[in-house]
Each structure stands twice: as C-alpha cells, then as structure tokens.
Length: 203
Image 1: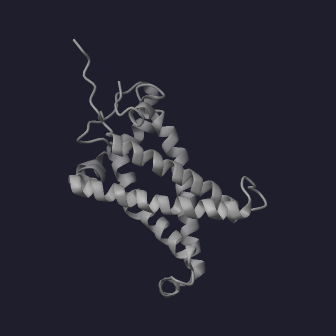
Image 2: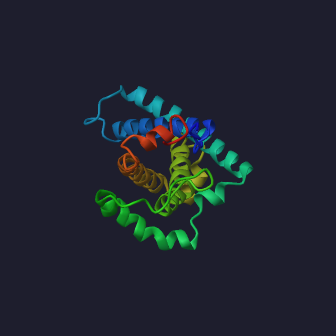
Image 3: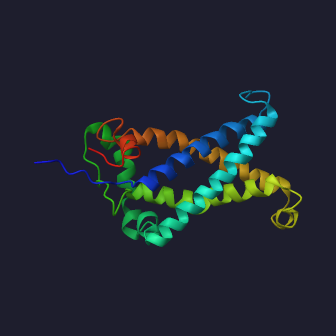
C-alpha cells in the first residue's frame, strides 16, 4: 500500500516561515551591529542600516500577509489562540521538553493540519505573533523616521522609551531563535521538524 503523506505546512506557510526567519536573523545581526559597532563588524555601518531597514519592511509585509491569509482561511483562532485546556496542559508539555523526551516518553500530541501546535507552542506563538512581533515592528517603524512619527513617539514617552522597547523585543527574539532551534530538533528524528517546514510533511 502506498504511504499517505499528510501536508502539515502548505507552500505559502513554508515560504512565509522562511522569509520571516531570514528577516529575523538578519534584523538581529544588523541590530546588534548598530547597537555595538565596536564588537560586531560584519557589515559597514551604512550597509547595516540599509539591510536593517530593508528587511524590517519585508518583515512587516510578510507579517501582514500571514495575518490576512489566516484570517481569510478562518484558522487564526484555532491554530494560535490557546484554550483553557491548552493552558492546563502547559506544565505537562514543559515536563516533556525538559525530562520526558530524554526518557523516551511519547509526545502529548502529534501535529495535524487542524492542530499543528502543542499547548506550549500555541501559547508561545500567541504571545509572539500577537504582541511581541507587532510591537517590535511598530517601534522599528517609528525609529526608522523619528521626525515623521514624532507625535506618536512623544505620546509613548519619547525616543528613549521606544528605543528601549525595541531593544527589549530584539533580545527576546534573539533568545527565541535559540530556543526555537533547539526545540525544532526534538522530533521523531533531529531533522523531522525541519523537514516538515521544507517539504511540508513529517514521516
């Protein structure tokens, strides 16, 4: 019998994910260089500013596409908003990542097209996509043209406040990248989850 391969991540999700990943990595690298130019010297300063701005706008556009498609498909709430049951299962999911996986325990759930994320993932992605990322993109936009957005910047307490929020989000994203990469290795095999985001399905 021919093996049935269920697509977890359709083409548009994979393109959106990897575009977002490239943007975030580039923004973190160039952002650290702009913040610590004496330590990080990957690009020239002007090039770092240019790449930071370009990939920042690509990230904004990519986020809007993600939000629009999920809204049109009616899957935003189902995939990204944790239920009371999800929240109650967070400790068990955390235990699995920290202990159970290394003991050979089975995952609490297997991903399906209708429910791709476990309770901890769903809760984390909810905070990431509906709070942290929008705040990061908006504060970056404000800092891109301080004079144009001066009324908004002043309303929120001035440039230093906006900059501090932007930097806090940047450190949060840098931390998220490390944790996300590690958790992505905890599949049936080390590369199973990576495969799902490249070809669309896991074995």
